[in-house]
Image (tube, rainbow, N blue to C red; front, side, top):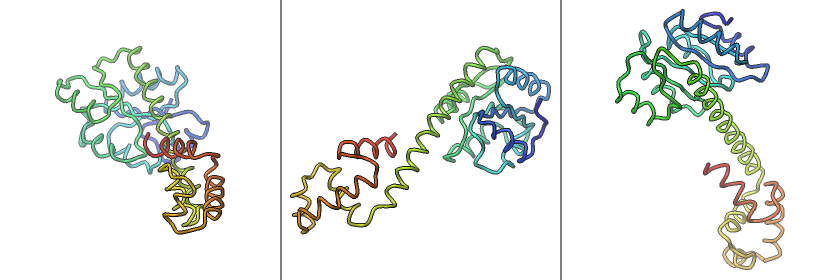
Length: 218
């Protein structure tokens, strides 16, 4: 049973086993307890928070997971908290919980990127399904981030000339065309092209375009 509120050390330790963490942010201690028990029983690592401040006190980045967020929190309410964290690239996916939210509030949250908006009392099956979706979104986002970081690392290994040549390669230019554009011998272009593709971990222009597009356009 998670303690309330958690410490940074508890959150970090909870993520060391590789399981995603579900952060339950609700001012109702009874509901926090019920949700924590339900999610723990289903194999999730749970961290419970009584308000927005106890959650934002945790230094990012947090272990992967998602957030179950009550709309009507004391102090900074759930919508305000969501708006505050939504622009952070490390933000965990959010599922809202509410006992009294209107349609406009629900629609606004969904447009802003919330995974779901569940009414209280919460149906256990709907809750678990929403958590599953949120965790899948988080996993996909982190995979895209890891891919982007990998590509950025490989791009940093390129020399200025190799990067310049590969930009032309991605535009579909032939070696002789690139040589004419850069006023360099075609055989030199071939050398830069080969070295650049090797550093990027690809074997062809098509594969290079695919890797870069997947990393930066996903």
